[in-house]
Amino acid sequence: MAEKIFTKEELAQYNGENGQPAYVAIDGVVYDVSNVGPWAGGKHHGNVAGNELSAAIEYSPHGKGVLKKLPVVGKLA
Image 1 (cartoon, one colour):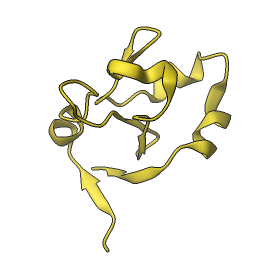
Image 2: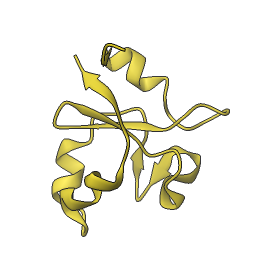
Image 3: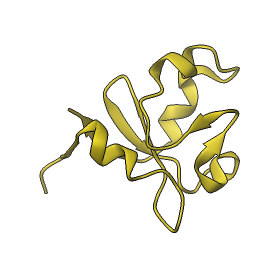
């Protein structure tokens, strides 16, 4: 199956609300954070799923190392 390419508008639909999965984009890669406890409801430390969060992860205590554990669902256009 071809890799899904998300526009910013499409990514915004995956905000973790109303039963939607929670996806975030980091450095052009879209990750599924739906099953990550701290992302319950699509929000985590002021960040909201459905967005490009490359700048935010630079300032997070865990950094990009946590991304290795997440499923990749596509790329951001």
